[in-house]
Structure formats: structure tokens, C-alpha cells
Length: 632
Image (tube, rainbow, N blue to C red; front, side, top):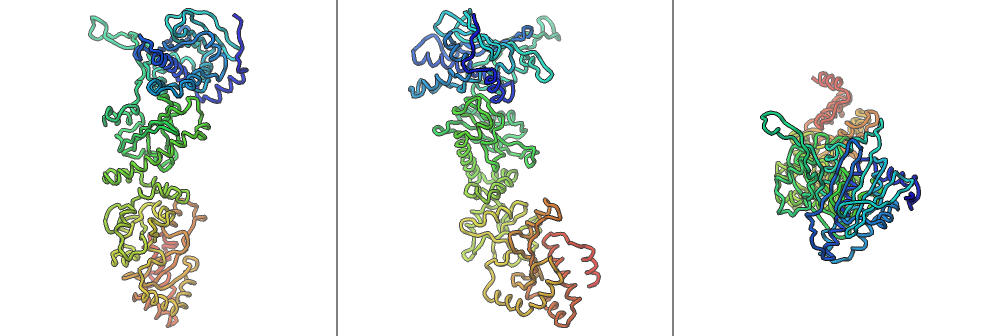
């Protein structure tokens, strides 16, 4: 029979489809198996709609056969099959999808007839992925109810032939004659049963019909004690029913744990299992896991976020990053959608409307599950917070708090009064009636914060403080600015709303009366401080450092660890002296007596003392030691 030309043009188009839509050659097996599954679904639908007896779902299967010597691989099904016209229409036109046409025709049918039909291949190019690995592709097909089978053959874009053939029973066999191996591509691996088994498990494990193949097994030789022999046995390679498609009542905790540890390479069971599904703008089923331990590389650039993405049980992407926001990137799991094409590329996914809808729904679902955990199982949530709390704080901080509404109720900080972690909502509930602000204090540890001079006065008044002991803490609170209309205030801010009018007036008078002394001290310290002033906020301590502007003292410490020393941002420090402390009286006396050398020495000592209490490095430790020796 004369060779016919493809209606959809040329080798260039065929090459473009194969090389741009598919990024790895092994995907061909997934595509051909999905086509076989579609063919079975079409026949199963026909039995339902036309009342055909003698066929049930248990009668259907997909078969893989290998002939290493002939270098052939075949995928067979006992589905609806194709006649000559079908072959010309579906295989003779590149990007012509019989499955898509079937799906369009059945939309709107009674739900009872179509709910168990799952057409996977909808794009019309999956079949041609076979040419990535095969030098010749043959299709032997016999339509259900027909007596005549047909043989379609092609070696690529130069065209195809269709001739009469023989086939036992309805269905289709796709026979691939594999290309010869090259230095870069080992096509022979697609004849290896272990490789084929692995590909089926990876991509097509949840195809609803059994995928069968002859596999090598080992057994004892009959009549011997220690001799073994290999034999061939027909085995089903796929699981068929994915765990996320089962009813909750059908799955045990042990099964969830096993699925998680095997699929996400974690030795520990998950902390939380989340199930989610919707129908409508985007139809999907999701099975998500919150790990109980952060992966060893979680806070490194090597960590890869993303969920496994399936289209009707067929894996289309191992790790789809677009399904999760960065602040929930610790979540592992799978999403299975009926609205996505098998052939969708990463670029297409980024623009896919259904995917964006799924992302928004999952985002809210994860947040609500975490909030439920916080309220109902505090111990479990604190375990989660210990592993992934910094990621939630990072999500609250980036993008100028654009995720505030989603994340602020999940945040936790150590409470000075409670002696344990507290949410912002719990803090606000405990606030005193006269308390204006949510107070926080920064330091390397709870113990070191408790020793800060600024803490003493607030503690005496019984005001609760949130202790910020992680690098991200203050950045998070400064970005949020407020919670439930209560502004965050650092204990080092210039106005804490706790000073009486008399105390403010006392500090103002001390500044006015000693402006020359403070000006001299400022000149002595140079650019280290932007001002020196009196304060009534201290109780027993003589001095502390506060800051002005956007960068606080603790933020300076964090930034100093990340930046070049010559380019790092510094806080605008203010040296505040306790107006009622004996050291202040001593300073005034020395300045009045004209002993400016001693005043300068005291100024530097007080400034360095304040640096040490804040946990900052001294600019010149040797000079500080010499100053102490001189004073002694």
C-alpha cells in the first residue's frame, strides 16, 4: 500500500512536538499506557451506556511485552480499539486527540454513567512521544464489534501506511522497534524488566487497570535443598488505587505513614496528615504531610520544595513548586487533578488557571489545619514550631507583610510572664487595661534578655514582654508593625508609654541643665552615637543604649553576620544615662570641676559597658582594658 503523508505537516512539526513538550525520553511509556487506559475506559463507557453484557471492569488489563533480540517493546490493551478510519483520523493527524473528542462528546451525560470514566490523554501528541525512542512504530488495532484488524506503520514524519491485519480480540497493540544505542542514549534500557517496572511505578502506578508483564522470579529447584532457578511469571506492576482516592475510613495511620516514608524518603512518620479535595473551578484531590522533623538540608539552597503533581493518577511532575507558597514549602504530598493535561510543560503550568486556584485553596487549607493544631493539640504545634517556625516568620516578613492575614495568628514568641511560647492573640488577651503597646525584647537567649537594664522597669510594672531570640524575630515584628491595633514596641524604643508626666519632665530638665555635658560626651564618642541624653526609664543600672531610625541595635547584629564589614548597616545609637544614678552625679561633678579628661574616660567606659550589655563587640577591646586600668 502506498505511504500516506501526515496531515499535520512535516518532520519539523513532529520534532518540535517531541522535543519541546517532553523533556525526558522515558515519558513515552507513561503516554502509551495512558492511551491504553483511555481505550479501555471508552469501551467500559460503551458497556454502561449501551447495556452490553459479558464485560466488566475486571476483564480489562494492559500488557507490556519485551523481545530483547528483536529490540521490540509492545504495549497492548483490550479496550475499544480502532478501525481504519480511526487510525487515519487519530494517528494520521498530529495533535488530533480521539480522547479529547470522546471527552467533549460525553460531557453533560448522566453522572452515573460518566463518573467512573477517566480520560487521561487529551492533548493529542502523547502517542508521538514513541518516536523519541523508536525507529519504527507499529499499531495493530481491532475495533470492538468489528471483524477486521488494521496495521498502522510509520518510521517518522515521512508518513505512514495502513494495511489489513490479524488480531485476536478487540483492542490495540503499539509495537516499538527501538533505536540503536548511542554514546548519549541507551535505548536498550527500555527492554530491561527492572527499568520498565520502575517507570510504571513512577509514572503509572495509579492507572486504574492492571498493567501486567512477564517478570523474572526465583524459586528452589524441585528436589533440591540449595539450588535455585529463575522462571517467568505474569505480574501486575501497578497499585491501581491511589491512597488519596480511598475514603478516610479505608486508610489506617500506618498506611499513611508507610506511604509518606516510602515516597518522601523520610525515616520519621509525619506530624500531620492533611486531606483536601474540591470540585468546581478546579477539581483535585490532595494528600499532604507536615513532617515531624525538618530535612537536614531544609534551610539550605539544596532543599527543593514542591508537591508531586498527577493528572488522573498519572504522574506529570515529580516536584511542582507552583502549588505551594514559599512559607509552606515544608509541606510534602501529592495533588491529583482531572483538569490538567499529561503534556503540560512547566511554562504552561505557571500560567495555568486551575493550578493557581488549587494553590490558593491549598494555602488556606494548610493554614486552617495548622491553626486547628495550635488550638487543639498545643504540644504537637510547638513541635511543628520548633522545626518550621522560622519559615512562618520569614513568610510574615517578606513582601512587606503581604501574607499578614494568613500567617500572623500562627506566630509564636517566648513570653516573659508565662515562661513559655505564646501566640500574639494570647498576649493581647493578657494585656493590662492601661497597656498601650505589645512589648518585645531582643537578645541571644532568654537569660541574657532578663539581664538587660531596660527590662527591669517593665518587669516591675508587671508588663509582659515577648522575647526575640531568633534572628528573624524583630524583622518580623517590625514588618507587621501591629497586631489587633496594638503597636509593637521594642524595650529600646525611645517611648514605651510607661513614663509619668513627672518622669518625663525630670528627664527633660536633666537634658536641658546638662546639655553642655552631653554635648561633650557626644563629641568624645564621635560617630559611635547620635546623641547622649538623660533617662528615667532605668532603675538600678546606670546606662543603656537605645536606637533611632529603622535599624535597631539587634538588627545591626544580625546584618553584621551577613554583610561585608565595610558595607554593613548600623543602628543610630543613643547613649541614655540614668538621671537618678550616682554615676550621673559623679559625671556632673567632674564636668563642673573642669576635669574633662576624666569625663571623657568615663564616657568611653559607659559606652563600652552599654555595648557589652547589648551583646555587641567592642571596637577596641585593648583600649577598653587600658581605660579600666587607668581608672583603677
